[in-house]
Image 1: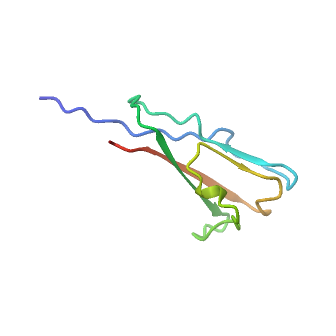
Image 2: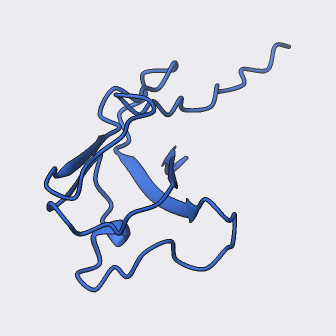
Length: 97
């Protein structure tokens, strides 16, 4: 008997490293993420951000809750993220049903 094992979803954030000014909006786009198994379940997106210091607390004040959106794209208005180094990551998953 053979056992079929599903493969993990692959998260992809477009754009890579970048430098922005306070007058530039930031778009994070993980819509190119994909499921190698091509299952029909929708993706769930979980975004995180750490500051250049690596501390676990929020890396900027997110009064609007942009980081909590379950969305493949996050758009931060110009000036929303303070000056400094930020590392954004996305976890992409599917409900195994």
